[in-house]
Image (cartoon, rainbow, N blue to C red; front, side):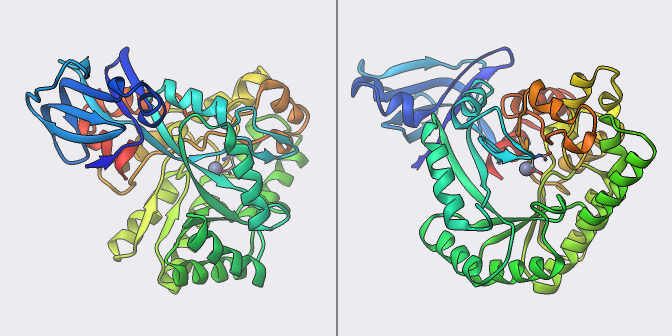
Length: 401
Ligand SMILES: NC(=O)NCCC(=O)O
Ligand SMILES: [Zn+2]
C-alpha cells in the first residue's frame, strides 16, 4: 500500500481531481472509503483496467472487480484514465524577486495547480541575506496557506561555515535534500565557481542533490549592456541579451564541475538545444545528470517577445529565455528519448503592473511565467495526443520521476 498525494480521473475536457489528504481524510468515516471503478489505471510502467480501492487516503488494493459494501463511495471511471496527480518539481510561490513579490502565493498557486491536475509541487526556499534557517522560517510561514501537498528545495546564495552547517541541518532535520545554485542574476542570486565547487562538495558529503540555474551571469550582464547601448530597451532585448550559447556554456561548466566532484547534478529549466546537448553528452560518458525542461520552453517560442504591446510581450519574459522555434521541438524529442527526464513549470507569476516595472528597461521586468495549472494538459495535448510519448511516459514525466 502507498499513501498517494492525490489522484486524477478523467478524459480530456471532463475530469475529476482530488487531493486525498484533504478531501477524503477530513470527510466522515463512511466517505473516507472510496472505490474508483473500472478505469484504465496507469503508472509509469504499465496500464490495466482495474478498480482502485482507497481507505483513509491510502490505496488498499488495485485489481479488477473489487467488491465493496454500501458504505463505500463509488466513482465511475469506465472509459477514463486513472493516474497519479501531477507533481510539479519547480515552482516559486510567494517569492520576493526583482523588487516585488510573485502574485501567486501558496494558496492561489496551489488552487491553480489542483484545477489543472497537479496535486503536489516542490518550491524553492530563498535564503534571507544568505541565511538558510531564516529562509526556511519565512517559507514555513508562507506555506501555512497551503491547500495541497508541497516540498522544498533550497537555494544557496552565499558561502561560509554557517551555510555549510545549515545545509546539514536542512538535510538531517528539515527534510530538504536538494540545493540550487544560480549561475545567473549577477549582483543578487549568482554565485562564483569557487562557491559552486564548495556547494557541490557539501551536497556530495550529505548525499543531497545539487541543482543549477545554468546561464553565464557575467556574459548576460555584458549582453544586457550591449542591448541598452544599441537603444534596445523592450522585452525583445531580454532574449537578445542572453542567447542559447550562454546557457550551453554554463550547463557544460556545471556538468564538468559536478563530474570533477563526482556528484549527481539536476539542471533546472533546460530551455535550449545547446544545454540539452551538453546533458546528452554527459549521459554518454556515464555521468548522472537530470535535465528538467519546463512547459513554457516545450510549447512556446520567442516570437511573443517581439509583440508591439509591452504588457503582452512582458508576460513571456523568463530566464533562461523562451527560445526560437525549433528549440521547443528538440526539447520535446529529448524528453521522449529520455535525454531529459521530467517536466516542471518554474511557475513564477507577476501581474501586468509588476511587469511594468520594466517598461523603460527590459532588465527591470520581473522574470517569470505561469504554468502550474497548464502543465498537465499542455503536455498531454502536445506530446501524448501527437503520439510522441505513451500514457505511461506521461505519468513518468509529470509525476513519478
Ligand atoms: N526563471 C525565471 O524567470 N524566474 C524564476 C526564478 C528562476 O528560477 O530563475
Ligand atoms: Zn525557478
